[in-house]
Amino acid sequence: MAGVLRGYFAIALTPFNEKGDLLWDELADEFDWIVRAGAHGVVWPVNNSEQMVLSASERIKGYEVMVQAVAGRIPTMAGVADTSKAGALELTEAAAKAGVDATIAVPPWSVKMSDPALIEDFYRDVADVGGVPMCIQNLGGQMGSNLTSAFVAELCERISLAEYVKEERDPHGTWVSELIGLNSPAIRGVFTGGHRLGMVASYKRGACGCIASADMTDICAQIWERMEAGDEEGARRIQDAEAVLRRAMGDIPYLANLKEVLVRRGVFSSNSRRSLGPYKLDASHAEELEHGLQALAPYFRL
Image (spheres, one colour):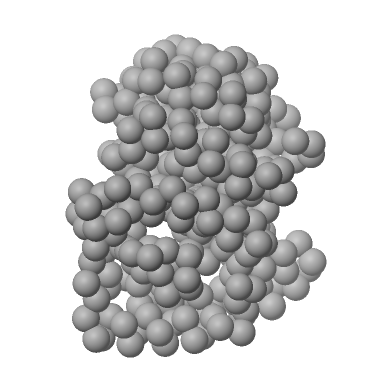
């Protein structure tokens, strides 16, 4: 992989049937759909991919499925975070063997690391084992370690392959600007995260891209591309149209809502989440979702 990672990197969701079995053919088809929809990169598995309920063997097989399905058309970024450093390194080794272009990880989340030296050691070992550019995912909340901007910059300066950051602390834009404002030459780019309705603002703050779920890959890729072309008005027009759908999705449980959109777009057969099964929408849910999808229909590529 050559060049700087930049643009909309779609997080592939993980398809399950009602019993919780992983649907491998649908996962491969989703990776291909993401490429054809115009993503600038693909990421799997991270939080939106339900990485917490995937087995190590499933993740290892999934890396191979991703690389084979994408077939070099766009960069592939493997989520290698785990509950321990040992687990993360095993996953990183498998991802590297599969031929991914980059890795992304938060520090172990089950028992969180609080010692900066241990966190640096974790990222250094992931970088060494992976041998490809690494993205530090800086997340707050239950899964994250809420690293300071200064410490993240230091990690990138001390670890040669720590080249990118996905900044997800709230308030989102504030921390993106603070990290970019440090002007560390070691950071090749700062990605924004799940708040993709702020993609225009994040672009103007200097973000190199956005990493968020795949359900609206073509829509988000076009927002980014219009900003790159200097068409802020056009980018905002698409972003405003997506807000109609986001409002409708807000009344449906998280992940089930994203998967339901992929069902309605012909990518998935079910909105099932592992251990939870499918979510049954009522008539009002369906009506509002269809209204949101119609608002975006002129911009769909697939």
